[in-house]
Length: 295
Ligand SMILES: [Zn+2]
Ligand SMILES: [Zn+2]
Image (cartoon, rainbow, N blue to C red; front, side):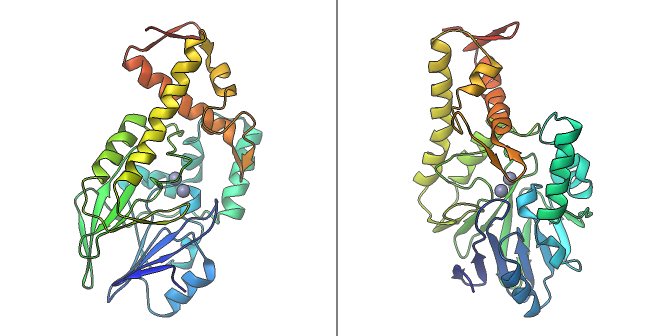
């Protein structure tokens, strides 16, 4: 039933968006992190003993799909993401400005496909906290950037680090939300390299990696490659934001739709973050609608 087991830490792979992989702690105290993998397997885990803690690494719809299976568990998340679990409009608002029709489409997708149910966070998790789950020790690492309240989870005895949506895929990091932050994404990834890790578990993609920090470097480097492509585009002349987005540096020129996601929106959100970063570094200035390379 499990795709990976070490000690009491277990892993269930979940497939593509709107699902993700789950981490389970099967000790005297039981916990599920990111209940959005496989409904039947999660149900089987629950049938085998009550789940004390339901933890969600961050407030995105592809990490909470099967939270409804665990109504009696203590629901844990970071305080910064709590409002988005408690109110659907607050979650939708993270994705930027959209028209009423689009908002309705997203609302339906979240409710019907992702089983979104407003839920109050019972226990706020924050950086440096340790949860003793039976004999399993789990350290909470606050890794903002992807969302403000994004969390990673470190198991020092097992040398496992669950990196959530800092997922080490070849597509690279996502930081398109209104509240996403590119600098913090970089800092969070740098920080993850400092842990003594034998196995990285991630929320998407391959899911299981040996603990070589080179995987984090490869992932980080995708950010700098995107930046380099953006600089090369601006070397060809000043561009508007729309022209930058059309270039499709991240998702290609006709990126299409994933769930309710128009990937062009993600492209836009992330290009805004890159232009801001270059602006702060005085590499780019803005004149009216145009972004201009300064050097
Ligand atoms: Zn996410
Ligand atoms: Zn995700």
